Amino acid sequence: MTTPSHNGSPAPHRVVVVGGGFGGLNVARYLRRAAVRVTLVDRRNFHLFQPLLYQVAAGELSPANIAAPLRSILERQRNCEVLLGSVDGFDVAGRRVIVDETDRGGEIPYDTLVVAAGARHSYFGHPEWERFAPGLKTVEDATEIRRRVFTAFELAEREAELKRPPVPLNFVIVGGGPTGVELAGAIAEIARYALKHEFRHIDPADAKVILVEAGERVLATFPTELSAKAQESLERLGVIVRTKTMVTSIADDHVILDAGGQVERLATQTVIWAAGVAASPLARKLADATGAVVDRAGRIAVEADLSLAGHPEIFVLGDMANYTHQGGKPLPGVAPVAIQQGRFVARLIQAKLNGKPLPKFRYRDLGNLATIGRSAAVADFGRVRFTGFVAWVMWLFIHLMNIVNYRNRVLVFVQWGWNYLTYDRSAGLITGDSDEQQEKRP
Image (cartoon, rainbow, N blue to C red; front, side):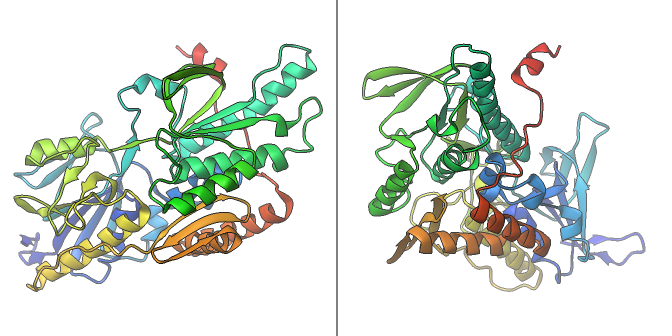
């Protein structure tokens, strides 16, 4: 489909991409030589490398180390423009995206639409828990978790200095997937090593880090032996791993745990949520506009080429897509899936424009990695598996090379080297409002 321009000549095919994450950004970048006009719309002006977000929460990296402005990434791509805005809906019949409906508003026309708006936290029917247990999806989430973690040590020191009853230094991480495991290991290292000599009245190593997982083992998507190795590494760091345990209640000073009917009240002022995610609310809006099917996690069922049934001009990628055409189960919501889908859709758009046969998307599983802490990780590449230092080096290299721009790769590499030599947490700043300040707000 082409649209006449103001001088009567055919205008370039208009591709609107919603979301500047791994999927959306790869669509835009891989269309750089195509005869199309790309408009990338995002609520944020930067691309965030989410796999390293937990290191911001742990004070190892600063947000600028893992984020880059979208405009700077795409500045040399002449057929692409970036728009800062919030997508509020879709006019499918008119092929328009509705932007900032409550603030002046506007519509962006498209010939092809790609929606890759990511995911948000899921509290399994308990949205009230979010106040007490922040998740880890955004820069703000990471700096809030960082504030809570380092503030907990400061409050314990203050109470000890003033001879008051001790504040329990219990850190509870809910969810034993990669994010939960990485956070648990990072916080344990903070307590044992990074803060070892910084306090006068408390011993940070006395802190308890409790990882709570409802399933039978941590890292359930990994082979059983790698899960066991990961748990062993966590326990060597002093992490208390509680499998087959559910969280039934979260408050400002405690959590309630249920382990096979045995209920326990655990005092804590620091809970971190890493247990579940749901697709962006934008998925529901798109489904309502197109009649697409949405699963329990809010993901949209897509065709074998990632398009929507009855709407070959609309594609859904990444955490928003329920792709079951390979193995019968939805593909996991991880960065490699979104990256490969983004590159596939870019090639597919070009194939359509050139009248070539349309392929089916096939995800190539390059393996799973998770780091537990200093010199400890697990890596699963199918028949080949690694643990310990070798897996950790592989994890470092793969993550470093997948950071979008060269500048951030250098910054992260230098910071990692310094952290490894010194255990320093130079980015462990306490920023943002305290809980007391938030309560005083009108």
